[in-house]
Length: 181
Image (cartoon, rainbow, N blue to C red; front, side, top):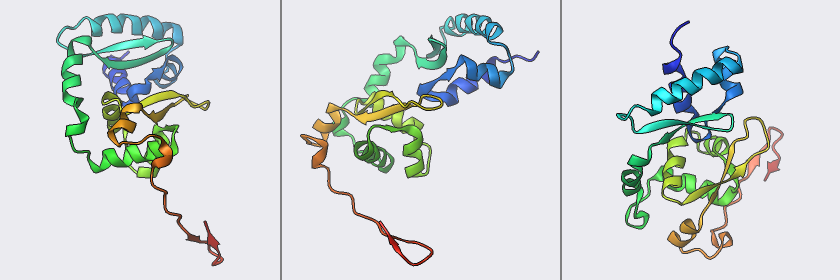
């Protein structure tokens, strides 16, 4: 049997904040869940014991994900602190606008609107406390729902989301030539 550690690490990396379930890993790796649990317990002990790494594997229930080690926390915080003095990229503003107008919204919905991956942007906005996880959608995979925070409201001087500007209405012409709003 080939070494599955780099494959598992890659899967955990691309699964982002949502992580991957034991059932998903079992299916993808074609390993029964009992064997996989033993293998993951051993791998987690080995991976997390490596003091040269800044990340570790965590298991919450039957979900696995990569997280930052506590030793890196203050440095990560410095990287994202003092949002008011930093300019926002176009990508950050687009992602924030989508979340503010459509909340609660999943990462997939944001990506469908923007047309590009937004996993890293969501991580940055979470780290800056401008958005938060607002539960999970009751659908396959149970994706996280995101909403804006009080810090977002303070940063943009909003008392409520009703103060956001109205979105323009777009018209679409159907194949039959009829207007559709």
